[in-house]
Length: 236
Ligand SMILES: [Zn+2]
Image (tube, rainbow, N blue to C red; front, side, top):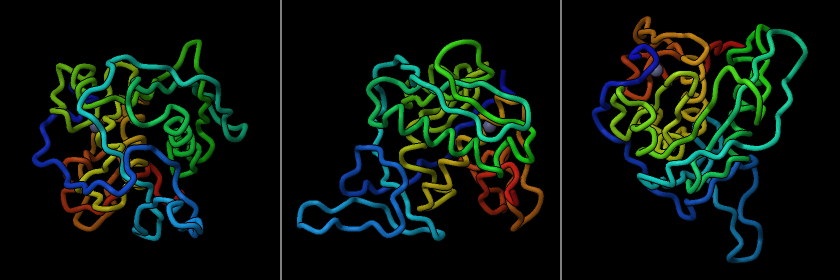
């Protein structure tokens, strides 16, 4: 089942200096929200990178409980056009990222016109029961390795296995060297890439030096001379 997996070992773990206050997941901060006034109540934010206020990095333990919790509730699809695709989100219990936060990010990415629903071809509804086309499963490095086997993710990579897009929480929490300090964009990339596999897309190569990397390039490992790009349809 090698086709869907980012299965080669990565050369080096990205360096990611923990930010003060890391350890809890937060949605992207508003552009101008800074210290909330009184000493000791500062809002922790990441830096501004590529014009985007970054979410705080989250330090991820190597292993958590090994058991997923399906995120409850539903998220309505955006728009009325296109094939309705139902999916579920699950987060390994014990990770320092809440299911609600992660599910909101996944839905935001899938609702974006630059994502797989581009041009009204598909719309995505998150559900917590019933048949689903795919699952997006946030997993500790240890669980990622177990779920992705026999693909070798080495505690570093993510994969698609069956109908499950296995997102390595280490990458989601801390980013990857290929995206530098742009954690917000890397998170969009890893969601779009692994969901892309679940929708049947295989890996692509970099089409030329300096061009935008297709989202199905294994951008966690290298950009191969391309520029980073998190989106299947970057021009919307
Ligand atoms: Zn891949």
